[in-house]
Amino acid sequence: MPQSLAQILVHLVFSTKNREAVLGDEIRDELHAYIGGIVENLKGVLLKAGSVEDHIHLLIVHPRTCSPSDLVQEVKTGSSKWLKTKGSRYGEFHWQNGFGMFSVSPGH
Image 1: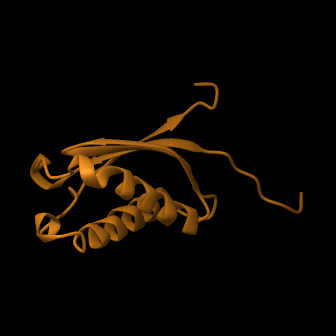
Image 2: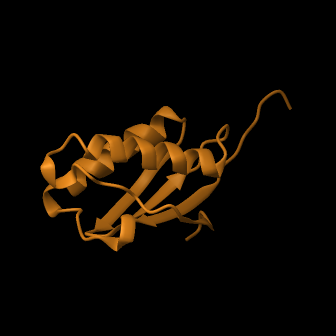
């Protein structure tokens, strides 16, 4: 087979540092779109994003050429740096160190 194919759907969830309630309603849609761009640059697809003040859920078609830990690092680092440019409320923003990533059946 001269080509490589993969379809791995994952549910990725992580929270703000110390579960601080800092993700305001006014920033969430833009944050989700920005994270979608990060995932797309890694050759993945963000299918769905949802968040509340202290954590975020992402449904992602995992990039074939990227490890799970590299995907998470790119998403968290890139979005954290971006958030810090969005005003004083986010000047000290950080995501927590850990994350949860779970495979999802395409049928679900």
